Length: 273
Ligand code: NAP
Image 1 (spheres, helix red, strand yellow):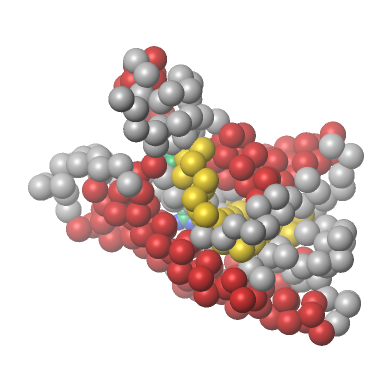
Image 2 (cartoon, rainbow, N blue to C red):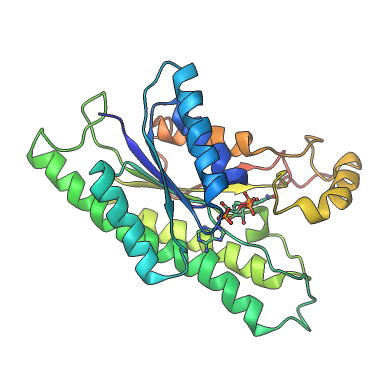
């Protein structure tokens, strides 16, 4: 039986990159999206092809859900349960940037509420739902060898949240985004502390500047900054870079780490003198 991953915002960008890497590892995938069904179907098909090329057979299922809505989060978990009957890995990836970048002395509440709902409330309560189900599965696996097991005979569930360098970098023209990403760092610590006794490991991945639709409008600005040395590794990040970090976690390569932050940012976080 394949392990199962649920990835939010998997239709495009970083979520899609994560899905492709997990497909190669032989994960069955629930590919969540908000509105873009065609992109989700394309990702699903590309994941099947990536898995096949790696000698794996997997299933992929797109699932529409707006993670800011309670009923949709419930339905996403129920869909995963009904379709695959288990959950090994939750990847909280879906997130949005403000529609307009506005100075924090001017920015309005509407954008703030939208970002908090999608970027914070969504992953917070989806993690709560996933964690409750994972605890159930851990108990079943402990009591009964017929519970969910991986090829090594152990069920070792994990939760990964994609935050950002904006968790600690002050951008005064998108304070709502920065505040939302900083909150995800605490989400990771809280759930890591709460779930360790259950054998559930929790991680935060902090991407730097990654080429996706989200950064499309500021591409030229960042081309210039990167060329001038903004990041010690002078290139854009790719969805695959983030996907490979998630793949390391998925392969249980960090078994004595939880609440850990993994920077996937070309060294942006380094202070140099
Ligand atoms: P993107 O290309 O804009 O893709 C966003 C994804 O999230 C899409 O799959 C979208 O679905 C989905 N989504 C948006 N709102 C949603 C909602 N309410 N419910 C469910 N899914 C929703 O963004 P990205 O650049 O890949 O970013 C992915 C994550 O990485 C975000 O959390 C972002 O903050 C973070 N990040 C990005 C960068 C970067 O430089 N790109 C850097 C650091 C962190 P649809 O296709 O249906 O719209």
